[in-house]
Length: 218
Image 1 (cartoon, helix red, strand yellow):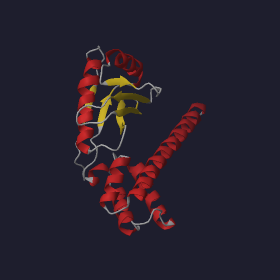
Image 2: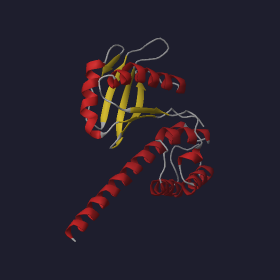
Image 3: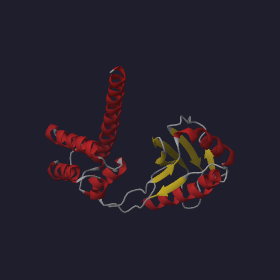
Image 4: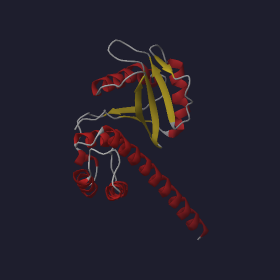
């Protein structure tokens, strides 16, 4: 299976303001700070003009955890981009933006993965088995799931969250389309996958805060 190559930047949260400030100082055409999107610390946005063989794009970084920024999306001004174009844009971003920020006395490490991905390598066997069972049994030509199939999909998400994983929404969508799911249904499942995982993370945070408060009172 092929997916858009992941790109991670190992940068502590405390250094985010310096990263944003340095980026604004070193950016030069065709790269710009995106004028209509506000950097929040959780999201940082860049724009690149069209260059030969590649369209104008918006590239967004997302704060994945306290020490990691991830390229969460590369959105073309028109149409879509291929896997090869995605990688080329990441390489251009690394040399045209990140290298200049590094030279600005801010040290961080960038990791770029591969497009080739074995689904079983992204999750534990129990979650992988639930996903494969769901894909085998659910009708693929419809635009909605039967309630029983929906429950099976949610069971997969719960197992994935519980056992740990490195599966991205767009990777899941690509795999579902390879299994024969139509474009609309696979896009809906991508959204549900991301939504429910974020909800589970919020729930875990609430439980952690509650347990910490109880321990403090004890």
